[in-house]
Image (cartoon, helix red, strand yellow):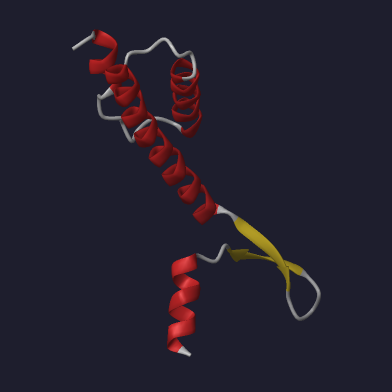
Amino acid sequence: MPKTAKSSTASVSQDVTFEEALKKLEAIVEEMESDELPLEDLIGHYEQGTQLAAVCQKKLAEAALKIQKLEKNAAGDLELKPFPLEEDEAAEQDSQ
C-alpha cells in the first residue's frame, strides 16, 4: 500500500483543535480534487476526511453548549440564559 494511503487511513485524534481539523480537512479536499490520486488513496483520504468532519461537528456542538444568549427579564433588564440544547427542549416537551 502506498505511504499516502496508509497515513490517510490513520485514526484522527480527538485532541486536535477545530481549526487544525478544518485545515486538514481542507487540505484533503484539495488533494482529492486534484484528480491525481489513485483510487486507494482517494478512499483513504475520504475516510480521514469523514473522521475530521466528525471532529469538527463535535467541536461545534461543544461550542454551542457554551454559548449563552441574552434575554430580557420581566423588568426589561438583560440577563444571561444558558443556550438551550435540543435534548433539553425535547425533555421539557415530554414532561408537559
